[in-house]
Figure (cartoon, rainbow, N blue to C red):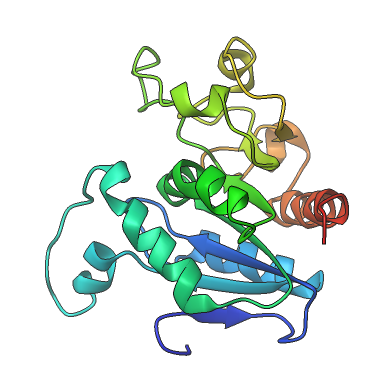
Length: 212
């Protein structure tokens, strides 16, 4: 931990990826930690941070997640505080990725970020497919990679195929993955480690196409 960031990967990596956590789990959750370690092993500099409400829980405060859009200023502040050198990609797990997606175009237009990565985008609340969170995604100008499990209860492959989304968005579909991208090996034949390796390979390929 350095200041408010949790770092993995080489300090001199050409690409830094800033990740925020999901609504209910901290930046050092098992899922986000495993993803960060895999991406770091692939040569990326990974920086994780927490929104204020989650950081407050560490000192005993029982704060619920606020509305996602109210966290936009905190994400912008994290980008500024990080001061990444080289190429910066922003994103996060679930709500963290959603917040990043709401500030991405502004930061991309300013030349501060090169791309956006969402790990399990929450397209709608579970069991409420009519409550879509996709309006801004239709006009997104930032190069985007969404890594989604095919059985994610926040947006399955079948559901997402019917949405109107920007052509800047590329998908990595992970077979039988849930909201944490984890498959059931007995059903899919894949392990969580298999999917993390696929994710890291996809991120490596995708970032190679970003302008440096």
